[in-house]
Image (cartoon, rainbow, N blue to C red; front, top):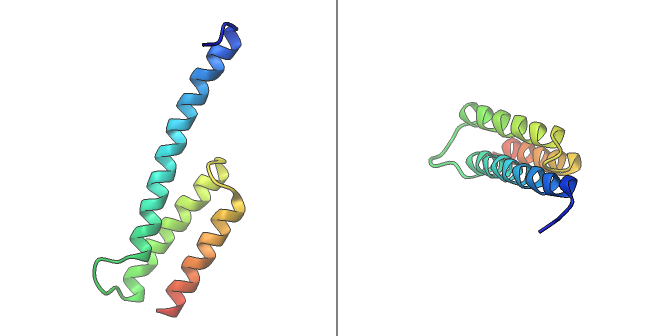
Length: 86
């Protein structure tokens, strides 16, 4: 355990940030999975809102620094490619 006051605070803030990032990543993975693996055959009209929701969450995670901006762009591109192929 750290003895320095600022380091003790840093440990606390790092832990809260880790938990927050974990929550954001989990929700993000769920949104991407929901788009990628539909429960039933989905038309393009019903798939579009799922893609929009996942893309929005990817952008939010990238803007907050939870994931890298290029990773968000790559995932959005892959989702768009998949949506256009169906």
